[in-house]
Image 1 (cartoon, rainbow, N blue to C red):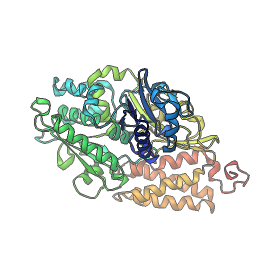
Image 2: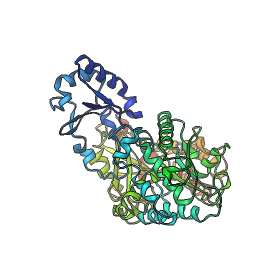
Image 3: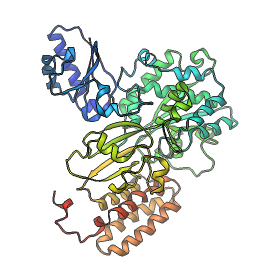
Image 4: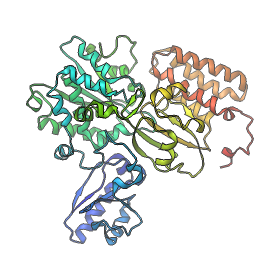
Length: 518
């Protein structure tokens, strides 16, 4: 029999290794012939470690399991998938959190050993690559364009247009760079791809290389992801040995090599040109554009720079066709986006949905409201540069244009929830402070403006009206004058907090305020 115990960072941090050891110990003690599979997570963070057992009727899940629960699970009939235990969750695909999702990119998540090439192929892996090898470069780019895929890192630029620019750029050397510097608050989708389905990213990058004539790829990975680094390096090694990478990939005559490079902990290196500077061995500072990286990127050559999720969506598009992907979504936002529920939320985890759902659905139908049991008050979408949204905006469709119209952004899909104890003035101050710490320092509006922003917010107690006016002027300067989105979007959380939660900027608040009486 097979029992699955996840091995991603979230599960490990919650004791998955101890659970796995306890399962093996119980199996030996009971003389049960057991195969323990360390699979990837299914993305249900609140149920981790989620242990699954394979039965004739399918897999049955139990969670969240601690090491001390294992003996009781065996006693209750774990091996047969018995339901007489408090941790019984039933078939994983029937858990409402999973059942209501539309998993295209993450359809394999948690099903198998992430490093098993045989499992990946059995579950449909490398089918997109097989089709790409039969197509012309222009046709691959056209399929990606027709799918409506846009950059999933936050900018939402059409992926096909970027690829077309690199394809048409004259050069004997081109590059594919994957931005895996996932530093936004509340985000973990990139990590789940790399830790739980690494060959999907490898396949997507190979297809990108074929599409534009690039022979070298780099995954720029944040240093805070040591497990993802180990898994990606091992996946690349195994893919190379199997002939999917190297001089003659799959016997096609094409060459594509892939390497992982670690960042050094700078948030600004999530910006594509600062990333390229860092990849070249320089200090991570933003470049002036134009020229665009698609024309003059890594080492001065035409370069695709795409986020992990953008590249991970490509195998599905090539396998199932662009229309299948484009049929999901709304307006110009096509396909799906893996939303990541975090913060003060009862059921945190990854939710892949077609564009068009609402924040309220995510927060309550999937997230189950606040973890604290108190009313939710604010939600930040899109990382530390995203706006704080009040309940009156939670019915807005999750769509790039709809969010832009109200001064917000979807970004990388991170959603951080706050209950009614949050102080939005402190959150606004943190936004400016974060920018001051993480700014590359190249442009004055960002470098100096963020520092002045912290000071102005601190002075609200002295002159609320005057300093609020000054804060708005400062934010306008940062928005219009900053070189990149770091300084240009820091005003989003600040101004949204001021606009939607003005009572938090009233320094004369009564101590009877519900947020002060916790």
